[in-house]
Image (cartoon, rainbow, N blue to C red; front, side):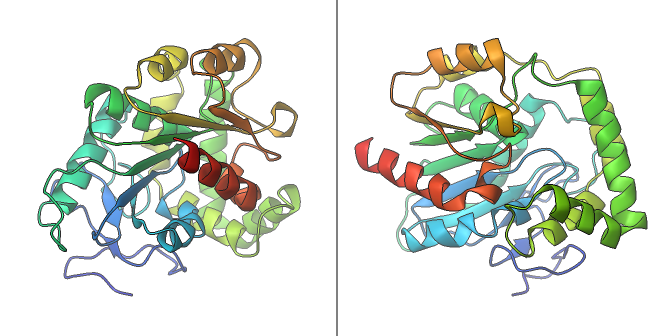
Length: 290
Protein backbone atom coordinates (compact mmCIF):
# COMPACT_ATOMS: atom_id res chain seq x y z
CA UNK A 1 0.00 0.00 0.00
CA UNK A 2 1.47 3.33 -1.04
CA UNK A 3 1.41 6.41 1.16
CA UNK A 4 0.59 10.01 0.22
CA UNK A 5 2.69 12.29 -2.01
CA UNK A 6 6.23 12.62 -0.70
CA UNK A 7 6.33 9.04 0.54
CA UNK A 8 9.81 7.52 0.75
CA UNK A 9 9.66 3.77 0.11
CA UNK A 10 12.46 1.58 1.51
CA UNK A 11 14.43 -0.73 -0.73
CA UNK A 12 13.47 -3.44 -1.35
CA UNK A 13 9.70 -3.28 -0.86
CA UNK A 14 8.85 -5.90 1.71
CA UNK A 15 5.67 -6.68 3.56
CA UNK A 16 5.46 -4.58 6.72
CA UNK A 17 3.11 -2.19 8.46
CA UNK A 18 0.29 -0.93 6.20
CA UNK A 19 1.61 2.50 5.21
CA UNK A 20 5.13 3.87 5.07
CA UNK A 21 5.26 7.65 5.22
CA UNK A 22 7.91 10.31 5.47
CA UNK A 23 8.10 12.26 8.68
CA UNK A 24 4.73 13.93 9.27
CA UNK A 25 6.55 16.60 11.24
CA UNK A 26 8.07 17.72 7.94
CA UNK A 27 11.56 18.31 9.37
CA UNK A 28 14.93 17.13 8.15
CA UNK A 29 15.79 15.45 11.45
CA UNK A 30 12.62 13.66 12.53
CA UNK A 31 11.37 10.09 12.24
CA UNK A 32 9.26 8.31 9.68
CA UNK A 33 5.96 6.74 10.72
CA UNK A 34 3.92 3.75 9.63
CA UNK A 35 0.19 3.53 10.10
CA UNK A 36 -3.00 5.55 10.24
CA UNK A 37 -4.61 6.61 13.49
CA UNK A 38 -7.97 5.37 14.71
CA UNK A 39 -7.04 4.33 18.27
CA UNK A 40 -6.37 3.01 20.80
CA UNK A 41 -2.83 3.62 19.67
CA UNK A 42 0.19 1.31 20.00
CA UNK A 43 3.53 2.94 19.16
CA UNK A 44 6.47 0.64 18.33
CA UNK A 45 10.11 1.78 18.54
CA UNK A 46 12.85 -0.39 17.01
CA UNK A 47 16.45 -0.99 18.03
CA UNK A 48 19.75 0.20 16.59
CA UNK A 49 20.26 -0.42 12.81
CA UNK A 50 16.72 -1.80 12.59
CA UNK A 51 13.53 -0.11 11.39
CA UNK A 52 9.77 -0.35 11.60
CA UNK A 53 10.06 -3.47 9.41
CA UNK A 54 11.06 -5.40 12.52
CA UNK A 55 7.45 -5.20 13.77
CA UNK A 56 5.99 -6.83 10.63
CA UNK A 57 4.40 -9.62 12.68
CA UNK A 58 3.86 -7.72 15.95
CA UNK A 59 1.90 -4.92 14.27
CA UNK A 60 -0.82 -7.14 12.75
CA UNK A 61 -1.07 -9.13 16.00
CA UNK A 62 -1.70 -5.95 17.97
CA UNK A 63 -4.18 -4.78 15.35
CA UNK A 64 -6.11 -8.01 15.86
CA UNK A 65 -6.28 -7.06 19.55
CA UNK A 66 -7.92 -3.75 18.69
CA UNK A 67 -4.92 -1.43 18.53
CA UNK A 68 -4.11 1.04 15.80
CA UNK A 69 -0.41 0.49 15.22
CA UNK A 70 2.13 3.19 14.49
CA UNK A 71 5.73 2.02 14.02
CA UNK A 72 8.38 4.71 13.78
CA UNK A 73 11.74 4.79 12.02
CA UNK A 74 14.27 6.51 14.27
CA UNK A 75 16.50 9.23 12.87
CA UNK A 76 19.10 7.72 10.56
CA UNK A 77 17.13 4.47 10.16
CA UNK A 78 14.68 3.09 7.62
CA UNK A 79 12.83 5.78 5.67
CA UNK A 80 13.75 8.61 8.04
CA UNK A 81 16.13 11.41 7.04
CA UNK A 82 19.83 10.72 7.38
CA UNK A 83 21.45 11.69 10.67
CA UNK A 84 24.00 14.49 10.73
CA UNK A 85 23.78 14.72 14.50
CA UNK A 86 21.25 14.28 17.26
CA UNK A 87 21.45 10.53 17.84
CA UNK A 88 21.38 10.73 21.63
CA UNK A 89 18.61 8.89 23.48
CA UNK A 90 17.07 12.25 24.44
CA UNK A 91 17.13 13.47 20.82
CA UNK A 92 15.49 10.29 19.56
CA UNK A 93 12.84 10.47 22.29
CA UNK A 94 12.01 14.01 21.18
CA UNK A 95 11.72 12.84 17.57
CA UNK A 96 9.27 10.08 18.54
CA UNK A 97 7.14 12.47 20.57
CA UNK A 98 6.97 15.00 17.71
CA UNK A 99 6.20 12.29 15.17
CA UNK A 100 3.38 10.81 17.24
CA UNK A 101 1.90 14.22 18.00
CA UNK A 102 2.01 15.25 14.35
CA UNK A 103 0.43 12.00 13.23
CA UNK A 104 -2.35 12.42 15.80
CA UNK A 105 -3.00 16.09 15.04
CA UNK A 106 -6.27 15.28 13.31
CA UNK A 107 -7.47 12.00 14.82
CA UNK A 108 -10.62 10.53 13.27
CA UNK A 109 -13.47 8.66 14.92
CA UNK A 110 -13.93 11.28 17.61
CA UNK A 111 -10.63 10.60 19.41
CA UNK A 112 -9.35 13.49 21.48
CA UNK A 113 -6.26 15.34 20.20
CA UNK A 114 -3.36 14.69 22.52
CA UNK A 115 -4.90 11.52 23.97
CA UNK A 116 -2.15 9.33 25.47
CA UNK A 117 -0.65 6.42 23.62
CA UNK A 118 -2.36 3.25 24.81
CA UNK A 119 0.70 1.02 24.49
CA UNK A 120 4.31 2.10 23.92
CA UNK A 121 6.77 -0.67 22.98
CA UNK A 122 10.52 -0.30 22.68
CA UNK A 123 13.18 -2.87 21.78
CA UNK A 124 16.86 -2.47 22.72
CA UNK A 125 17.84 1.13 21.89
CA UNK A 126 14.14 1.76 21.32
CA UNK A 127 13.49 0.64 24.90
CA UNK A 128 15.83 3.35 26.19
CA UNK A 129 14.17 5.89 23.91
CA UNK A 130 10.73 4.89 25.18
CA UNK A 131 11.83 5.11 28.82
CA UNK A 132 13.39 8.51 28.23
CA UNK A 133 10.21 9.68 26.52
CA UNK A 134 7.79 8.68 29.29
CA UNK A 135 10.15 10.08 31.91
CA UNK A 136 10.25 13.46 30.19
CA UNK A 137 6.57 13.49 29.28
CA UNK A 138 4.40 11.95 32.01
CA UNK A 139 1.01 11.07 30.58
CA UNK A 140 2.38 10.42 27.09
CA UNK A 141 1.49 6.72 27.32
CA UNK A 142 -0.69 4.52 29.50
CA UNK A 143 1.48 1.36 29.41
CA UNK A 144 5.06 0.59 28.40
CA UNK A 145 6.70 -2.62 27.20
CA UNK A 146 10.51 -2.67 27.45
CA UNK A 147 12.06 -5.48 25.39
CA UNK A 148 15.60 -6.57 26.27
CA UNK A 149 17.18 -3.15 26.86
CA UNK A 150 20.97 -3.00 27.01
CA UNK A 151 22.84 -2.74 30.26
CA UNK A 152 25.39 0.04 30.49
CA UNK A 153 28.16 -2.44 31.37
CA UNK A 154 26.76 -5.32 29.30
CA UNK A 155 27.68 -3.95 25.87
CA UNK A 156 31.11 -3.57 24.27
CA UNK A 157 30.30 -0.31 22.51
CA UNK A 158 33.44 -0.21 20.35
CA UNK A 159 32.77 -3.76 19.14
CA UNK A 160 29.14 -2.86 18.47
CA UNK A 161 30.22 0.11 16.34
CA UNK A 162 32.65 -2.05 14.37
CA UNK A 163 29.94 -4.67 13.84
CA UNK A 164 27.52 -2.03 12.59
CA UNK A 165 30.05 -0.82 10.02
CA UNK A 166 30.87 -4.34 8.85
CA UNK A 167 27.28 -5.56 8.65
CA UNK A 168 25.96 -2.49 6.85
CA UNK A 169 28.82 -2.68 4.35
CA UNK A 170 28.01 -6.31 3.59
CA UNK A 171 24.29 -5.50 3.35
CA UNK A 172 25.14 -3.25 0.39
CA UNK A 173 27.94 -5.24 -1.25
CA UNK A 174 26.76 -8.82 -0.62
CA UNK A 175 23.13 -8.84 0.56
CA UNK A 176 22.61 -12.49 -0.41
CA UNK A 177 25.65 -13.62 1.55
CA UNK A 178 24.58 -11.63 4.61
CA UNK A 179 21.07 -13.06 4.40
CA UNK A 180 22.48 -16.59 4.36
CA UNK A 181 24.74 -15.77 7.32
CA UNK A 182 21.81 -14.43 9.32
CA UNK A 183 19.67 -17.44 8.53
CA UNK A 184 22.47 -19.77 9.64
CA UNK A 185 23.05 -18.10 13.01
CA UNK A 186 19.38 -17.38 13.72
CA UNK A 187 17.51 -20.63 13.04
CA UNK A 188 14.55 -19.49 15.14
CA UNK A 189 13.81 -16.58 12.80
CA UNK A 190 10.75 -17.07 10.57
CA UNK A 191 11.08 -17.09 6.76
CA UNK A 192 11.63 -13.57 5.44
CA UNK A 193 13.09 -12.19 8.68
CA UNK A 194 16.70 -12.28 7.51
CA UNK A 195 15.77 -10.51 4.25
CA UNK A 196 14.12 -7.72 6.24
CA UNK A 197 17.15 -7.45 8.49
CA UNK A 198 19.42 -7.05 5.48
CA UNK A 199 17.15 -4.32 4.11
CA UNK A 200 17.25 -2.52 7.47
CA UNK A 201 21.03 -2.59 7.52
CA UNK A 202 21.24 -1.31 3.95
CA UNK A 203 18.87 1.55 4.76
CA UNK A 204 20.50 2.86 7.93
CA UNK A 205 23.06 5.66 8.22
CA UNK A 206 25.86 3.37 9.38
CA UNK A 207 28.67 5.89 9.80
CA UNK A 208 26.63 8.29 11.92
CA UNK A 209 25.15 5.49 14.05
CA UNK A 210 28.53 3.81 14.62
CA UNK A 211 30.10 7.14 15.57
CA UNK A 212 27.30 7.79 18.05
CA UNK A 213 27.60 4.43 19.85
CA UNK A 214 31.39 3.93 19.73
CA UNK A 215 32.21 6.06 22.80
CA UNK A 216 29.32 4.48 24.71
CA UNK A 217 25.72 5.57 25.22
CA UNK A 218 25.18 7.21 28.61
CA UNK A 219 22.10 6.00 30.48
CA UNK A 220 21.03 4.63 33.86
CA UNK A 221 18.58 1.82 33.12
CA UNK A 222 17.52 1.06 36.72
CA UNK A 223 16.85 4.76 37.34
CA UNK A 224 14.83 5.05 34.12
CA UNK A 225 12.77 2.00 35.05
CA UNK A 226 12.20 3.10 38.64
CA UNK A 227 11.13 6.59 37.54
CA UNK A 228 8.75 5.48 34.79
CA UNK A 229 5.36 7.00 35.70
CA UNK A 230 3.23 4.18 34.26
CA UNK A 231 2.90 0.37 34.34
CA UNK A 232 5.98 -1.25 32.77
CA UNK A 233 6.44 -4.80 31.46
CA UNK A 234 10.08 -5.87 31.11
CA UNK A 235 10.48 -8.65 28.54
CA UNK A 236 13.97 -10.13 28.72
CA UNK A 237 15.89 -12.57 26.57
CA UNK A 238 17.82 -15.39 28.22
CA UNK A 239 21.38 -14.45 29.09
CA UNK A 240 22.75 -17.68 27.60
CA UNK A 241 20.95 -17.00 24.30
CA UNK A 242 22.28 -13.48 23.77
CA UNK A 243 20.47 -10.97 25.97
CA UNK A 244 21.96 -7.49 26.07
CA UNK A 245 21.19 -7.18 29.78
CA UNK A 246 23.61 -9.27 31.82
CA UNK A 247 24.82 -9.94 35.34
CA UNK A 248 24.63 -7.05 37.78
CA UNK A 249 23.01 -4.82 35.13
CA UNK A 250 20.20 -7.34 34.83
CA UNK A 251 19.77 -7.75 38.59
CA UNK A 252 19.56 -3.99 39.13
CA UNK A 253 17.01 -3.54 36.33
CA UNK A 254 14.74 -6.31 37.61
CA UNK A 255 14.94 -4.97 41.17
CA UNK A 256 13.96 -1.50 39.95
CA UNK A 257 10.48 -2.76 39.02
CA UNK A 258 7.70 -4.22 41.18
CA UNK A 259 7.51 -7.99 41.46
CA UNK A 260 5.68 -9.72 38.66
CA UNK A 261 6.44 -7.23 35.90
CA UNK A 262 9.47 -9.02 34.42
CA UNK A 263 9.25 -12.00 32.09
CA UNK A 264 12.24 -13.96 30.75
CA UNK A 265 11.40 -15.54 27.40
CA UNK A 266 13.16 -18.40 25.57
CA UNK A 267 14.95 -16.28 22.99
CA UNK A 268 17.98 -14.15 22.24
CA UNK A 269 18.15 -10.37 22.10
CA UNK A 270 15.50 -9.94 19.39
CA UNK A 271 12.75 -11.61 21.41
CA UNK A 272 9.89 -10.57 19.12
CA UNK A 273 11.72 -12.11 16.16
CA UNK A 274 12.51 -15.43 17.81
CA UNK A 275 9.63 -16.07 20.21
CA UNK A 276 6.64 -14.09 18.99
CA UNK A 277 4.03 -16.41 20.50
CA UNK A 278 5.64 -16.20 23.94
CA UNK A 279 6.05 -12.42 23.50
CA UNK A 280 2.35 -11.97 22.73
CA UNK A 281 1.26 -14.35 25.48
CA UNK A 282 3.28 -12.43 28.08
CA UNK A 283 1.88 -9.15 26.82
CA UNK A 284 -1.69 -10.45 26.85
CA UNK A 285 -1.42 -11.77 30.41
CA UNK A 286 0.10 -8.50 31.64
CA UNK A 287 -2.54 -6.36 29.93
CA UNK A 288 -5.26 -8.48 31.52
CA UNK A 289 -3.71 -7.98 34.95
CA UNK A 290 -2.71 -4.31 34.76
